[in-house]
Every structure is written in C-alpha cells, then in structure tokens.
Length: 418
Image 1: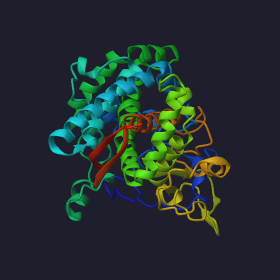
Image 2 (image 1 turned 180 degrees about the horizontal axis):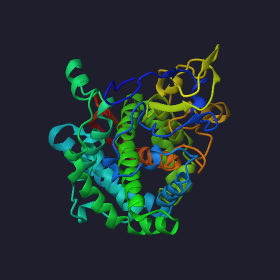
Image 3 (image 1 turned 180 degrees about the vertical axis):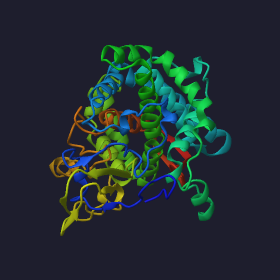
Image 4 (image 1 turned 60 degrees about the horizontal axis):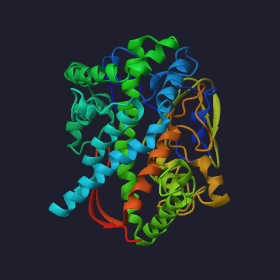
C-alpha cells in the first residue's frame, strides 16, 4: 500500500477482501489499532497540536475511554438542536441551489454542501455560527487544506504518476505550511467549544488535549465524512430515477403529515425506505474505504473458502468496498438497491454494513474503535434524504470524480406537487 519509503517504514499488508475475513479488524483482542487510522503511516502530531488524537489511540491505552466518552458527550449534549439546525442550514442550501439553477441551469452540490456541513456541525453541536466569528466563511477551505496535509501520501489527484509518487507518496508535506491555518481553526474551537472543553477537564483530560480532539472530531471526522457521504447520497439517489424518487417522496410526506407536519425523530422512524436508502449508500460506497489492524498474535484468518496464516505483528488491511460488495452476501452487489435493507431479510444483512469500523447492528463503546458518531451520521443522512423529498418530487444530477469522492452537479430540481 502507498505511501513508500521515507513516509511508511513497511508498506506491506495482508489484504482482507470479503465479508467473511473483514470482521477480524473489529476484534480488539486480535488486532492492535495503535497509530493505524491512516494505515501504514501516521501523520505528524504537529498537525494536531502535538497530540495523538483519539483516532490513533488503541482501546487498551488509558486515555482512550476518557477521550471517546468526551466525543459521545459532544455528539449528544445538544441533541435537541440537531434537527432544527439541520433544517435551517440545509433549507438555505436548497434555496441557493434553486437560485443557481434559475441563473445558470446547474448547481454544484459539493461547494454548497461544504459550507452547509461546517455551519450545521458548529451550530448543532456547539451552538455557534462560524459566520459570526473571525473564521467567517473560511472554515471549509482551511479544513480541506489541513486534511490534505495529513492524507497526501494516500491521495491520487490525477497528476502524472511520477509527479504524484515523487511529491505526495514519497515525502511528507511540511506541517509548518499549514500551521497558521490550523491555528485559526483551533482558536475558533477553543472559544466555541469551551463548554465541551470544560467537560473534558471534569473527566480528567487536559484542556489542550480536549481542544485538539474536538477539532479533529469536528473537522476531520465529521466535516470530512459529510464532505464525502452527502455528495455520494445525492449521486446514488439522483441515479435511482423517478420511480424511486416517487416512493421516497410518498413515504417522507406521509410520515411528516402523520406527525403534525413536523420532521421529528418519530417521523423519521416511520420512514423505513429512507433508512434503507441511507444504509445502501453506506454499503455501496463507504465514506472510509480502508481499515487497518496489526495482528496481536499468530492466527488464522478465514475467508469464505480458505484459512490464511497471519503472523504476530503483520498489518491487516481491509478494503471495505470489496467486502461490502461480496456477492456471497449481497445479490446484485454493484447495483444501488434502495430497498435492500427493508423487512426481516434486509435486517439480517445489516451486520455486513461496516462503514463505521464495526457492524451496523452494533453500538460503539468505550472498549472498541467503532465510530463514536455512527448513529449521528445515519441520522443526518436520513435528514438529508427527508429534506430533499419534502421539497422536491425528483431531481437530476451529473457526476464526476474528485480526490475526496464524487463531484455532483444538480441539473434540475422538480418542486413538490403533492
């Protein structure tokens, strides 16, 4: 696996490529997760305030449980604000897109989504609008540049191979080039996240360590996840066509009408097709394609048909898009099937949806590396689908590719008629 020498000490991995072998990566009695979030190398801690943030900490380390519990607090302490903030911010997004369509006949969903995602996260989880801070509208641009410096050894930007391998995959980009940008982000969260930092201090976490974990969770994990997942959702839904759009619109509007005309948690619970459509997007195109774990001991890892000897210390690499398109588990694995997870048969498949570094049927705990925001991500993706089909009967898209997922241009929005 990339990167090469001077960045990774040893690029060799044992690849897990089916649904049978992949779950060994979730068993922390078998694999160690220390410093493996990005794979065969770890970005400099100069990019995270000098701290190893939670994503690089193994559950056996003493600071794992306090840090993960703080992220659970961050995600839940303002839970009642999540739906109203999402509706406000993404309502504005669709208004801007309608203006684009009226003026130019198309609208770049990704550009609007970047601004909306960061604004929503800050308002919902911290109660602060970055537009009213010194950051103004610069947050997404600063984050994207900062993330690039962390994952550049893995990226393909479409440059000639020799150029990319020479510039990105062989040497690290100097953290000093982005330190001023990161400082601006940290200053914003030091102020906006004061209540959460105070909570971290009560849990025995140093204030600066809490701060840099909040920055990473909000910017790399949450914003980065929305930057990839939401265009992916719009892409797959756009391609699904009018019949699927009609089924989703009918379900969403009926559930909202049955709940007093409000989009609430209860209304969302009455939208099983919406939830299935979200799970299917997470299955067919998981936002984070690669997971890693280092074998704690000699063992045999079993695929569907064979057992493979793995030695202590070898690095296991799971390529999730192959595991979640395993034809031994999923019929029509390369097709987006929005109702795949409906009913009892669909529910039985959910354990094979593993985008969160764990099965969808499990809940993250202080003892594992499953994404702390697993349920939050599914919730906001369901909100996106519901918001779309409350407003529109159907829509069309053009899809391209980018270094961080799909590039999606919306070419039509057909307003709701029923």
